[in-house]
Image 1: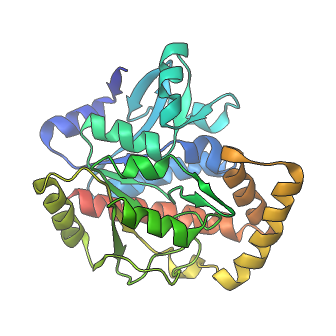
Image 2 (image 1 turned 60 degrees about the vertical axis):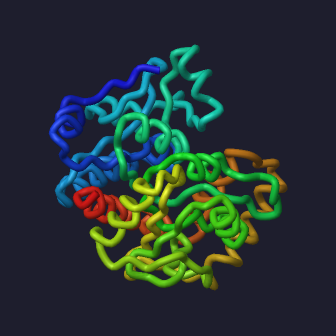
Image 3 (image 1 turned 45 degrees about the vertical axis):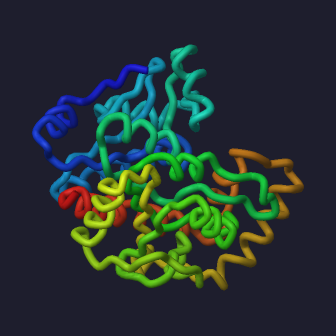
Length: 296
């Protein structure tokens, strides 16, 4: 598949200027309008504010786009026919010349091929609750792609202990940004271990550089807690989530539709607090990713 770079990203890569990849599924499927387009531009601003160049990634007419124009971001935010694609969908997208939004897996894949070393997102996919065999395509991609992914852990609707175990088994290094346990997306702690705490971009970059020097081909996750003022405790969210999982089962919501369904419903049940937390952690993670990219 062809990679089309924006002029800004192409110049940055040629000059050795730090670049941070951003996904597009959060624009097309993760957030409601107009918060989705507002957040897309906030994330790019956060990356620039940290001294790096943002490269939002998507697929248009079956080709990779690394760095988007405003009109392309507007299309992602407003069109209803933008397909959410993971790795298995890439041959279809190319052959059928589709317009698509990229997940963590596809963004990692494209960013790595484009020569970008750092990627910022909200939360990764993982092992689904109650369905141990249902594993997000994000996980195997992280196990075979040497990129640094800045996130706030796995989405809280997933089975966090089994997701953490999967990452450990498959050699994905999990770092905690100024924290000593794995964040739980909307909550700052999960009770689950990390492999190492890092206090700043230099420490995270040193570990990423050591991974490359060792020839390892796995991702490094830098997990960042949601800003404290936006945190929602697990004790508050778990009963809501249990109720929504039952509702999803009753409505027959399964597969790739279940996570966006649960996140949307949680926002309604919490009066928009989970949506505000999601946007806050996305923007914060973009700034952290820039700090790391500037030191790799």
